[in-house]
Image (cartoon, rainbow, N blue to C red; front, side, top):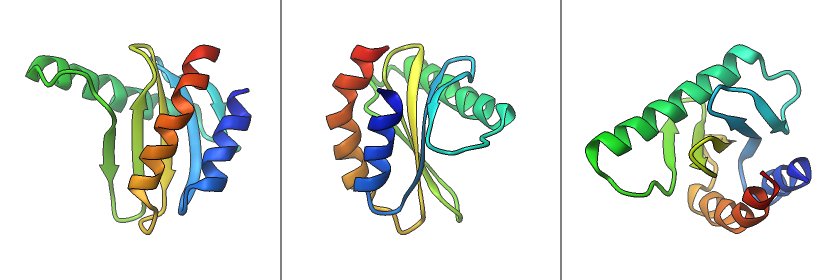
Length: 114
């Protein structure tokens, strides 16, 4: 179920390169990228946990998503719950707005499967 939804995101979002569902400890529940190291998964989880902590400490309310941008790619980290997140990696030319739309559309089926 997860894999199918993640593959749909990759197929429908221009510039999408990989998608992951991770828990707060960095364990992958699903991934479209073969060979994502445990270390990389833990780094994504660390970023997710830090962003949630900052959001809570700053009193920013409910987080829709977080955008991490580097010269090589963009990563949208979208909380599915307080324990799980979806990370979608895009090329620099990727369409962030379309990605956010499709992530929101996929969220109900992903959260139900959790």
